[in-house]
Image (cartoon, rainbow, N blue to C red; front, top):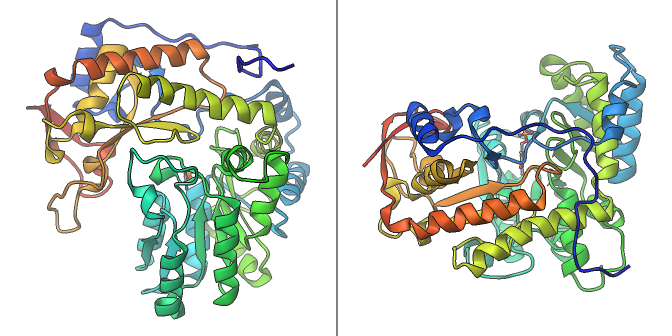
Length: 456
Ligand SMILES: *Cc1c(COP(=O)(O)O)cnc(C)c1O
C-alpha cells in the first residue's frame, strides 16, 4: 500500500476528557499563576505541550505488562526482562535501572568526575549540565555552527563539531574523563546526529583513549532521522540503526520518560566492569538495590515493552511526521521556528516574532502566555528566563528566546495538532498587541519553574 496519508498507527481504547475553558477563565488562571504556566493547574490546560517527558500514552500491551510486574526486592523477573531488552538494544554488559534520566547522570558523573574536569557534548541538557557543574566541572557544548542558527536548514543540526572536539582533546585531554553525545539534541531543538558523525566522534575517542557515552533519551527518533536523511541508511530498520549507534559507544544514560514510552524510569548502561561496580554502590545509596533502582517491578515491565514498541517503524514514521506536519503549517503561515522540525517538539522563535519586546522583557514568556490565553495551549519558554540569570544575580539575554511546543507520544491526534497550528498562527497575527513582562519574584536557581511575573 502506498497511500500518502500518514495515520496514527493505533486505535484508541481508553480516553481522557479535556476541559474547555473560556478566555476570561484562562485570563484569571494565568494571572493567579503569576503569569508562569508552570504554576497553572494542568486541568485548566486544553492541549498540554509543556513537555514530552513522562507524558506519553502507554499501549494496551504495556498496561497488561504492569500486571506481570514482579515486586521482589532482589532478583525480580521484571528486572531480568528489562535487562535483556536493554542489552539486546544497546549491547552494553551492565544495565543499571534508575528512577529517571537525571539519576543516571548523577551516578555516572559522581563516579567519574574530579573537580576541574571537562565533559564535551554537542549540547548538554539542563540536568546533565547541572550534574556536571555540581561536581565543579565544565560542561562544554561543541555542536556544529549550523546547529546554532534557528532558521538554517541542515539534516543533522545536532552533529558534534569534530574539529572543536579534537581541539578540546588535544589541549585539555588530560581533564576529559569521557565524551558525550546527546541524541537527539534536545537543547538544540531536538535535532539529530548522523551515524557518520558518531563514527567520527568514536574515532577521536579511540585516538585519545576516551570512553564515549550517549545521552540516549531520544535514540529511536534519532535512528529514524538517520534512516530517512542519511545516505545508504534507508533500507535498514530503526532498531538496526539504533543498535549501531549504541555499538559505537561505551555506555549511555537514558530517560525512559522519553523514548522508553513510559511515565517514569531510566537507566545507566556501560561495558566497564569497575565503573559499573562504583555506580551500583552509589545506586544502593540513593536509588535502591541494583535490580530495581528506585522503580517498581511493574515500571521495569512497562519500560521493557516500551523500548520494543518505540523502534517500530510505523510508530516512528507517524511520530516524526506529525511533528513535522505542525512545523510545516507554521512555516507556511510565516511563523518563525527552528528549522527543520525536530523529533519531539517545535520551537517557536519568539525573538524573531516579537522584535518589539527586548530579551530582558521576555518575549518567550509573552508568547507562551498568549498561546495559553488565546487557545488554551501550554508551551514553555526556553530563553532568557531559563538561561539568562548569571551566578552573581545579574541578567543577560539567553542565546535565543524560544517557545517549545513538545509533543507527548501517542497522546494527541491530527485534529489536535491542526488546532495547535491554528492557535499559534492566530497568536502570531496578534503579535503587535503582545507586551513584555517583568519578574516580580524569583528564586536564585532554576527560576523559570517558580518565578512570578507582571505584565508591562
Ligand atoms: C529529559 C532529559 C534528561 C533527563 O531525564 P529525566 O528523566 O527528566 O531526569 C537528560 N537528557 C536529555 C537530553 C533529556 O531530554
